[in-house]
Structures are given as C-alpha cells and as structure tokens.
Length: 328
Image (cartoon, rainbow, N blue to C red):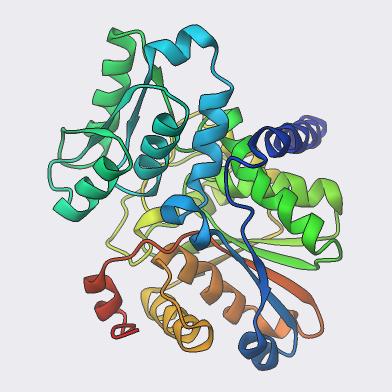
C-alpha cells in the first residue's frame, strides 16, 4: 500500500507540473453546473466539459504534455502513434502545434471521416492492420526501427500527468467536490485525475465507470492483475479494448478508485439522450458511460457535490441516430 500511496502522490505532483507546462497551450475547459441533472438527483451536479477541449476530448492534454517533455533529439526524430480516434487526433494536433514530425497509423477499416479528421489536424496518416492490436504492434515496431518515439495513449507517466491536469482544474474550480465519475479505458484519465483528486482530499469518492461490453479494467482490478478478455461492440468505443500487460495505470486505478460501476448499452444510450435533452449538445459514448454510472448510483448522491467528466464529444451522426440522439 505504501508503494501505491507514493505512486499517487508522485503522479499528482507530475500533474501539477504538467498544468504549469500546458498553461495557455490547451483549453481550460468549463466546469458547468447542470440544473436539470441537479434537480433530478437532488444534488449539485457539475459536468467537466472535455468535449470543449481542442480536438474534442481530454486526450490533447496527455499528448501535448508528452511531446513537450521529450528531449530535443527525440523531438527531432519524431513520434509514432496508433489510433483512429481521439488519441490519434490529439497526437496529430500536438505534433503540428509544437513542430514535431511523426506518423499516425490507423486500421484499414477506419472510416474516411476519421481518417480525414486526423489528416486535417496535420497528421501523416497511414493505414495498417485490421483489428487495432496489429496496428499498434506495427506502430511500435516502426518507431523502434526508425528511432522514433512511440506515444502511448495511456501507458506513459507523462501522458497520465497530462490527463491529470483535468483533475487540477476540477479541484481549483470546486475544491469541496464530494464525488467524481470518470469513464475508464486504459486508465490514463482516471490515473492522472484520480491521483490529483485523492491527493487534494482522500475523502473524495471516485467512481470508475465502464461499459459491460468491455469492462477490462474493472475485471482486472477484481482479479488483482491485468487480464485478457474479449470486448463486444459498444457505444463507448473510446473505452473499449484491452490493457497492456505491465501498464502503469493499473496500480494507479487500484489505488484511487473507490467503486466500479459497469453499465449496459441501454443505460449508456439513455444517459446520452438525457444529456442531450438537458444540456443541448451531443457527447460520445464514453461520456455517456460516466453519466449512466452516476444515474445508477443516484441514491448515494443526494445533497452531494458531484462532478462527471464529459471526456469527449466526437461522435458520428450514425451513432447519434443509433442511440436515439439524432436531430440535435
């Protein structure tokens, strides 16, 4: 336990340093109280609007911090990433903004819209692989062969510190927060923001939120080790998929999460619809997971100050229609 506490503290310190480093380079996103959800839950419900971040998700925080903490020689050689989603867009934007070259590999079945979005942010986008895992393995191999830096979406302490700046902003804007709901995939956002929140106040209750279709971190924490398990299709594609063996996020998530809440696809879709109806803007499925988890725990939240991190807003019209959020 001592090792975990030390790890949490050092991560919080790294996030504070990252916040100073990123000041003026990324958006300080709003923390907005929701009248509709507050009234419905008899609580003070706030949404941390990472969907308002440049590139539309929290991922820009970690990508930018990692690029800025590379040595000059490594920046000159460039970076490689693998992602057809938020991480790919964030790395492309951050590399262009800070004059670092690099390549984003995406699976061959990536939609033209996602491909073009990453390219518009300045990315040299290349197709490889069919299931995401082989794309990632190819990206790692390419980086090693060309002396470039592989920029992981979560398994990197400086990426985690960058994501932790979201937590820094929360405690600055709402220091007496009681409970925070955070969607978890690889665990970078939870590891960083959770460490900041727990260091600020150990009594803050932190909920890790995952889709039933891919609850890899939840089941791994239950097992006491990172496990491999199949993922099914989910509205929360941003949190779906496996976790690298030895990922530094595992121990952090173990240490900072008080409760895990797993929600099904109907709950996610209902949460997304409720958010659109109340707040008037679309969100992606991973954000819906965190809202659904809050709604599932509503009996624990009366009278509390609650924050839900809206981790991103990048969603296609087709998926919006699928979950009944069309024509917004």
